[in-house]
Amino acid sequence: MIRGLKAIDYSGFAESIVRDAKELQMYALYFIASTKVSTIPGISIAGSDPNATLYTPTLDVEYLTLGKPKTLDIIPVTPDGIPTPAVLTRASLKLLKIPYLIVNCGAYIEPQVPHVSLPGRSVGGRIDVEDALPTENVIRLYSSGKTLGLMIGKRDCVFIVGESIPGGTTTAMSIMEALGYRASGRVSSASPENPHNLKIEVFAKALKRRGLQLPVKDVFDAVAIFGDPLHISIAGFVSGAIEQEAKVLLAGGTQMCAVLAILKKLSINIAGKVAIATTRWIVEDNSADMAGLVKDIAPEIPILYPPLSFVDTPYSGLMAYEKGYVKEGVGAGGTIVGALIKGFDINDIKKSIYGEYQALVTDGYVSQYKKD
Image (cartoon, rainbow, N blue to C red; front, side):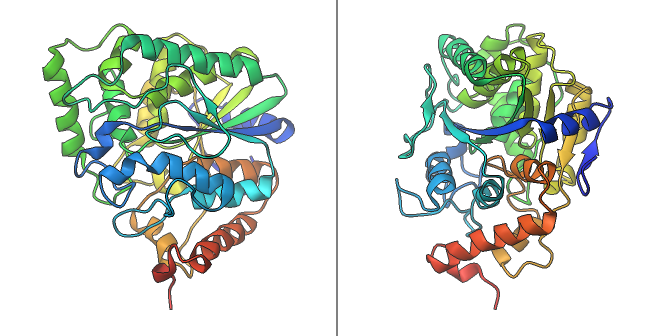
């Protein structure tokens, strides 16, 4: 295993996937979408207020690409002012210098940077009062994602696949529950106060509204009722990429368990081809159960994570990660894992992150969050 890189590995595939990733060409994709679930008060802190969460995916990837947002002159922050985890992703990409793509599968606002837009993209509905998407859109998103994977996937490459979708842990939980996996109370949150009861209430209202028996047998129907545009699109991409014999690092937290659930129910063989790459804060999150979810859904999939800590950071916006805030997003953990695999030291990565954060301070986006 790469020095410093840690793994939860029930199957023994971690070593081979890391070894392959070290030798293969590395690329990254960051999928973005919005769900109106994020506007339910208390569900998401991935924005300064519930309505602001609809803009977060677009602002995330504009900042990731340009170092500054374009659609609005603000960096996505929590209500407490903690900035987007795209800071970590951007810092790692600057070290890696790998090609990357933004994939829009249903963002509320189209980003003002070059990107790929999937046919069938649309904003997800608020599932407690309406279906997430028409089933035909879900099928089209899966097919479009798969086509993208077939187009750019090849045997000698590994893809880091990240995401930005506020409210996504609620829809991910709902997808897993709808497909027959026990996920309630086991998904993470960007808040140290994980709103499990509210997430479960949203799913219960969706279930009551439809009057369905669980599990839902048809994967696409389950996503159409309980899901969002993002997880099905990523699942499609993974299926296409691994068909072309590429490897995939799913760069995210418990949301990526919903991607695994979709792939498993579609009988896609992912053993030895896919790993989850996330952060230490997700793995150590006592309010969730990342390892248990993976073991229940796809025990053949290893979880990789870096030993990154901000206990000595000069920035309170980063110190907040050690207090249970943010934890993951915009492919942060997976992109850091990619940098470790390609030979960068964790201290190199921290230095790059601090440089990115200081740039936000210098530009006035987070000046009040620098320690004295």
